Image 1 (cartoon, rainbow, N blue to C red):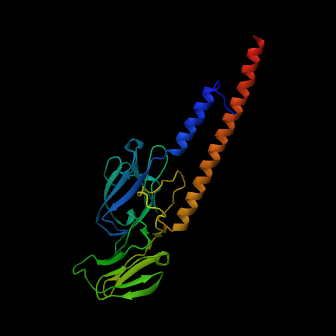
Image 2: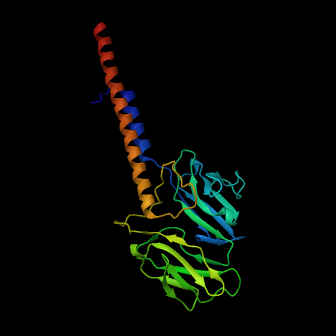
Image 3: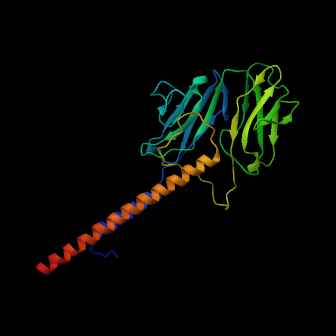
Amino acid sequence: MFTSNQPECHFSLVLISLLSCTTNQARLTVSPSSSQFFEGDFVSLNCEEDDSSAGWTLRRNTSKRQRTQCGGDGWGEGAGSSCNITVFTQDSGVYWCESREGPISNMVNLTVTGGSVILQSPVLPVMEGDDVTLLCKTKTTPSNLPAAFYKDGSLISNRTSNNMTIQHVSRSDEGLYKCDISGHGESPSSWITVTGKPTNKSPSTPTPVSTSTSIPTSATRPGSSVLLHVLISVGSVCVLVLLVLLVLLVRQCNHRKPEADQGKAAR
């Protein structure tokens, strides 16, 4: 037990507690909100941040280069937490926000195609019960042409228009989607993630950031199971670090107390 004659130890424990409960948070958004783009499209990326003092910057991994920064590594224009980019096929990859302290935001997978068809689908996870509209677009006009939609390689709908709405999505709707317009071609595939509804009615909060330094090495399908494993690993590491710090502090404080007692006895 820590007594009042050990103020340094007590202060250290309080400080560690405060640090462990404080996280800088950011959420990466994409405008236009889509996971697929044509070559030459203009895309705006933004870190919606809780704490601007954390120094959030935009980074990405592509098939050619890893963990490069917007504006400083030959791609994109912007300052701080915003980035604008005219995209080409080499810009396909995983994008995220990262702070000076190390935490990162959610990750988004962007695909840029040199083809003539794209599937506009949610770039961020969608919540169970929501309606989701998929839009199959051609690069040339007219764009509102009949389209076929596929999930995990199987045909799910032949439409007379270029859009399809999935009503009240559930976890079973999670998967890899693409579309096809006869005479124009097929879009790339994009993964749609479905998340569960919150169990309480408290105000929504930004997506918790990860303190992991393990970043995808290339543009990969962002499955929900991968994110879950990352979060579990990060939580375990944080708990282990805190336990080690606490043990060291306890040993240090217990070591100081006998020295103080010996000093009193000597006097």
